[in-house]
Structures are given as structure tokens and as C-alpha cells.
Image (cartoon, rainbow, N blue to C red):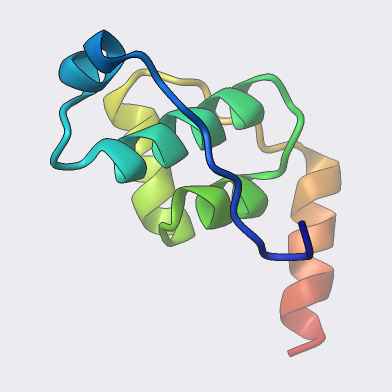
Length: 86
């Protein structure tokens, strides 16, 4: 799998029923991104990218699900450097 590629994952049909077939891919991406973010394995920006959302939309989803935002000074510095580089 190359950079930006996709991975196929199989789920039991009852899991698909719980999540809902209509928005299944979107919801699985969102749940995966939120869990990776919650565990501190990815940054806020990367999690939003995994979820296919803007950072603002991802923050909304975190808040909606009562997930704490992990935004420390180091991440702020990285974001500031990135913005200044634009």
C-alpha cells in the first residue's frame, strides 16, 4: 500500500447494522480517527484528515461525543510554524 492508499476491512454484518450501512465508511473513518486521537497516536490535524473532515468539523464531532481535546503547547508551536510558513 502506497502513501494515501486505502485498506479494505471486513466487519461482521451485525456491526454494519449497528453503525448503519448508509454512512458506514464515513462513520468508521470518524471513529477510527477519534480513537487514534484520543490515544495520542495522531495529531488533531492528522485525525481530521483521516476522518475526511476539516479541523473545525472534527472538533465539533469530538465535542459532540464528549472527547477531550489534546492540544498542548508543542502542538500549538507546530501549528504556528506551519501557518507562518504559508
